[in-house]
Amino acid sequence: MNYKELIKKMKENEHIISMTPVDRIVEIGHSAGMNSDSAVLDLCCGYGEMLKIWHEVFDIRGIGIDICSEFIEVGKKRIAENAVSDVTLIEADIFKWQTDEKFDYVCLSGEDFGGFKSTIELLEKYVKPNGKLIIGTRYSKVEEPPKELIEFEGETLPLIEINRIIRSKGYYITSMATDTQAEWERYIMWSAKRHLNDLRKSPENQPLYEWCDKWYDMYFYYRRPYEGYVTVVIEKL
Image (cartoon, rainbow, N blue to C red; front, side):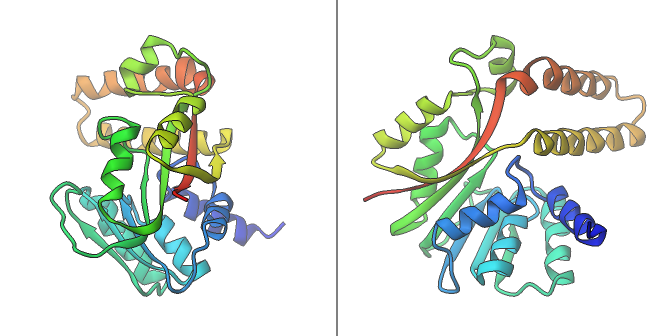
């Protein structure tokens, strides 16, 4: 086993704020036809890791937008350290950021702005004719998820319902990658460690203690057995 490569992959995984493994992100880019002529917009990009990976593999040009200054700051540092060109990260509210440019691929992972249908409509504002949308979203593993999960997460649809919405908007799924349990564990504990770091800074913050307990309880009782994560590429005829 090449342990150095393993550590490198772990570092990449740490900066992907989704439950889609790195190899599947590469596979998504390949199957979607990304190449050196591709312009990619990633809304709520987090650390910009997907853009970084797609640039390194396919030489795409990318722009990432996120409102979190921590994500953008760390992402810019990683881009500089890895000598990545043609990927720009911008700290901004995606609803206030403006551009006249249209992109070959428009992405959004892990966020829900009024439901899955609304997410499609948001991304459509930026995509070229015949461009493709890439959406990462939670889904329910059962037809009727527990009310506790809905109250915690908001809309959580089964895959068949997600596909129905995609078809109602005139799109077809042309590539998809589902989660792994290992990626869920990585994501859940990544978030937990961030919460714990905040607690160390504010040990008297009782609401944060309560949130930490709820975070673990929700994962073990509801998210682990009932919730999945999928990244889909959708396009029109």
